[in-house]
Image (cartoon, rainbow, N blue to C red):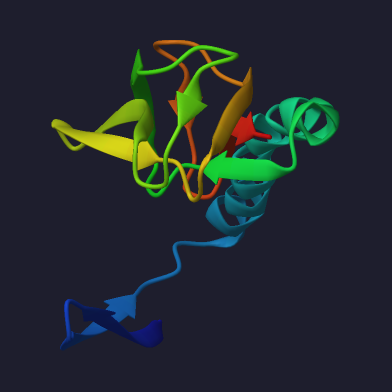
Length: 123
């Protein structure tokens, strides 16, 4: 049994986790490397977006792309919504970090996204 302390919103919780044998321990590491595999897919748009624009517009939370608020070629000001994602049944705008022109949109409506994933680039 392993003991952990987890802090959620400033409140600490002591948690005990019981290991259930070698077969569970062997399957758990196999499942964890599978999770980063989908994160590897966005790496291709990141590489292509580097040539499209120099300023990355990144997701602030994991969720699903709900709406594309802009299109390539649109001019945006700092704080303007570029893309809207849905996370925990809330619509969260992903805003432009600075003034610029949308150089690329690296996602589509309905795509899953991770926190910190590049969704668009600006020039």
